[in-house]
Image (tube, rainbow, N blue to C red; front, side):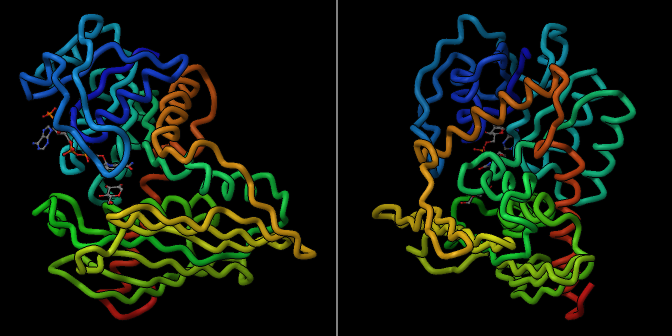
Length: 342
Ligand SMILES: NC(=O)C1=CN([C@@H]2O[C@H](COP(=O)(O)OP(=O)(O)OC[C@H]3O[C@@H](n4cnc5c(N)ncnc54)[C@H](OP(=O)(O)O)[C@@H]3O)[C@@H](O)[C@H]2O)C=CC1
Ligand SMILES: O=C1CO[C@H](CO)[C@@H](O)[C@@H]1O
């Protein structure tokens, strides 16, 4: 698979690093508005994980200022979209119209209708639209999906999930529904996608939350499914207190095992309650889960995209799952706003 990255920011850099390590997925091009970055100076990029950006060798890469120019390169199979979310819909549409497969960073769009229209467009063109929902490739979360799919611990009966951050002062548009969509669409969508993978679409959603403008800033949701035994609660959002770390975690129970995990990224270091699988009968297993570097999951992600172009099932990357995840977030917002279950 020959790929071109659109947008060189935090995710553009992480995806670039992933292509350096992936097999079968080759980065051949990128586009950026920034002349310095077109010259390979990617210093100054720094996200909340991964190494800082550095000078890269662009001699073997085709470099463009705009996506339109990059789309004229017939040798590119797939465009890897690492642009801000408010640009995703136009960018994905353009790529599909130009006959390119797409791997788009999460969330696919700012709302479920736009996401569904992109999925339909890809289908009508016979192209793959994949969404880089990375959680399903992080080993701490992957093992839940694998256990659910293999049925090795019996039915997945439910769980509690959380994903919370401190104040978002790095992005003034964070709570703007036209730009980022607040924590529901930017952050919680990771869990909505995971829940969709584990449990399907909920039958009923009951959410309560604190609003900030048109979007929820902090919320708790209960979800029920066709199977009355399955009970899920999920919470998240922003706590506006400086120093409050990013945290995520879960406790998920199956018929024959319970799995627990917690992570906190404090300013002065990370703290972890590593994954534990508590088996029926009480045996506690502490599985070895790779290097702990989240960047590894992006290598698997681009490698999986290449496998999809070679004929494999898209699995967690399927565009429809990303559209469903946005629909779950919208159901939660609707429940919060109406003070009713939906
Ligand atoms: N999976 C994950 O863990 C994460 C996913 N994300 C997702 O990745 C996507 C990109 O986020 P992130 O990399 O953090 O964002 P950044 O702001 O760091 O990078 C986005 C890049 O898009 C380009 N761009 C082009 N047009 C515009 C425009 N009009 N306004 C702003 N930027 C523009 C810029 O690159 P240039 O100057 O080269 O054109 C910019 O650097 C989002 O969808 C986000 O939700 C983000 C963080 C983590
Ligand atoms: O997906 C993401 C990971 O978490 C970040 C917050 O810490 C989000 O802003 C980002 O979009």
